[in-house]
Image (cartoon, rainbow, N blue to C red; front, side):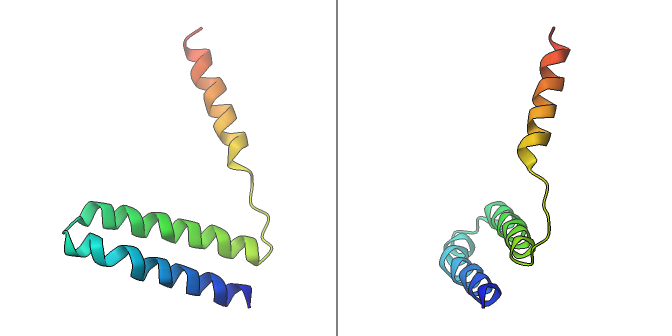
Length: 72
């Protein structure tokens, strides 16, 4: 049931946002929107299916520490 609600939410979001982007010929913004929603949908679906997803904050913290070490 949750998967159906997720798909319904993504479809409603697409029907709400996409027409304005298409009407105004904002193709790059539409591509970014489709990419972001697709990524969000994939992650949400994996979470609903119970897949263990690593925390991206750990990767961001490691990258920030590495970048800071370059300036020391």
